[in-house]
Length: 352
Image 1 (cartoon, helix red, strand yellow):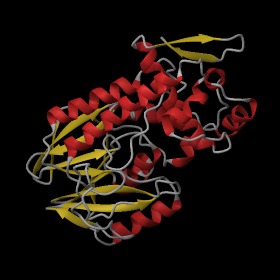
Image 2 (image 1 turned 90 degrees about the horizontal axis):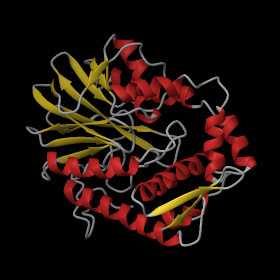
Image 3 (image 1 turned 60 degrees about the vertical axis):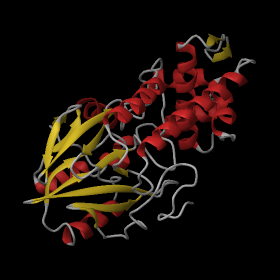
Image 4 (image 1 turned 30 degrees about the vertical axis):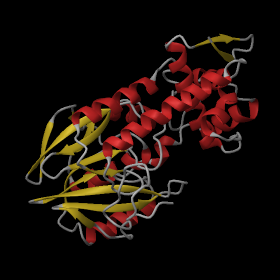
């Protein structure tokens, strides 16, 4: 782990904001901009959330996972450093650690939820799966990837967990659009939409403060998961993600302080964008090299992630499968690989 005040040797990044805030702390890292950290019960361990001060309260950006521990954390913040109240809630994207408490917060303060359209609608769709059996199409998707009967049975039992990780969303929202200018706390913030990690991920850039809230679109020490989901098996999210990295580089200058959802605020945006793109290209080259012999999606984990992943680790196994298919679809769509289904409906990929 890199020390928060240390410059990443050779990577062009620096972490000028010091150690992360403690529970219940809302640390000011720029005029009117506060950094808070909420716990996650996963290997990520935390999510960063942000409060932008306004005349009559705070705009919140991202909200944490929907559970009792996060409710307690928000109550401590709202009774303490954020006692001024909430004016609106902005959610960068649909994942439960970001949107989980949005409904609870908007109902408590009678305020609007701000999201991009695709993120809001897909979030409502995924929450609607809760209480329903896994669809045949999803089972076929994972069987096609090479999952065995045990992994498929685990998926059936776990299906619909999304809705249990978030407070119910409000039935209406305020749509955010790419390139829209939003006035917050006396400053203009431009909406910068990225794709690949999720379909319409909203970042926010403030030229006056030289701040860029990157959500999960740009992280300093880990790479965002880029996955194909059963609802769109032929998607090419890796192409979308790489294009988004280029677009962010063109629209957001290098001298910003990046406020990511995980790890610490950092400088060196353009160096990080270049490193992320180069890392993906190396992963694609490794994958292409292993496809001299036909492989299923589940056979490619070693090439992409450097290790085997067991079906017993159900969450990681699902994420790895989705990311592997994203890389395979990228190669297929560019004529670098071909796939053929066997008599059991399993897809086998080979380099061409």
